[in-house]
Image 1: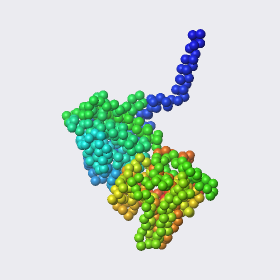
Image 2: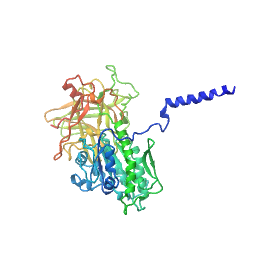
Image 3: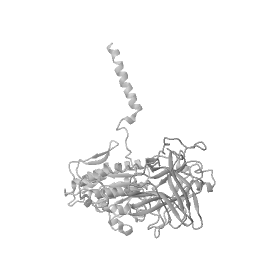
Image 4: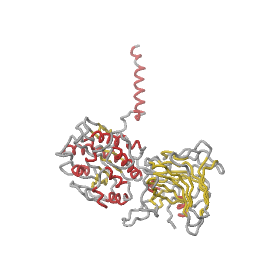
Length: 554
């Protein structure tokens, strides 16, 4: 009887083991990161000053040589480097100049195409060609003297304080979101020996590691943080990969434990950082590569029976949607006065812009944009924020569109800067074939919306960290009047999930477009804009009707 009495226990244990084998994701430690070097040579550039130079140097930090041993072809910047000697300026407040200014395209073109050395380290790998894929950047130890208080929220302008530093990193996140084809690695500034601002430095760097991306709802894997500061504060402080998991352990100090006679980290501290950084960099690289987003597409919505409209409740949004901005069901966007119409004075242009019931992709209403625009004129309908909004958590915007006919030219406009000094960014489009009968899904990445040609610095990319408005508009040629109707529904912020297109993007035909060339800038490689789903068998004229394209201003 005792022997038989063990069977229920044995069966219970066996059942539990089988369940654990069947559902390994239930174990919090079952997922491990890949800390092996890349299989192919990867180009990397490091933006730094003297501490970074010591870290790279053979016989000091050995980072340059060790990067090569891990299949990274390393280049770097230093004092005096680049256009306008931008290499001189690597303090935290300077990062907005690098990544969020009118000169950003010039600076970043130089960064992406740099292949030279500006420090002393051994390079044994041959240059594989192409642009740098990874951009590492670091401020020096004076940037650990952050004023303010540890828990200060993000401010409204860049300065060397806790709130100002948070503002800077929130602002530059928009550029990173617009460039998912690059991996950006933040190296936190090293600590000071002086304890005056040590608590602030600790709090800010902890925010960068734990809260920065989360607070911004940033879902891409192309931004990573390595806590160089933490590693140098205590021999028991680490930011490393251990047993396939990233481990971030703080010690008991907030000041420099590894001095070299001044606040430059010593050989011992620099080599500790190298040992812990390389496996971390490999993890960052593999995470980025394994989750690279697809290119945006223009895709028809699910078909409905002729003459019918989708019934409430709202139709499901595409899988790439991050958040719904407006479904036109009667709720004005917070911080705006709702959708407003504008058109050129002293013309006979007519414009109506208001929600319309009974015609919607989802729910009960959509925005009806009805227009009759005089030649050589313009009209627009949009919303405008009272204060700048941060949309950098998304990759772009999406909406559903219908029209009374295909081929209607219109603009998608985004406004940046500040409410008192808006700048305009435009993508010119036409209503695609099929939109006269059905709802079409339009997905637009930030990189496709460029500064308008009639403002300063035409062709510069949009910064989603400073959104002041959005509109749908028209601009007519000198001899042509344009009239028609366009409906828009389910305006959303675009996330990182797929769009539901089963065909691999490399098999889809592309339409190549390019931004306006900037005076004095080297010609950049022209990349395909959008893959056109299902257009393989169509003649070119219809392919152009389906894909997004830019019209030149007449």
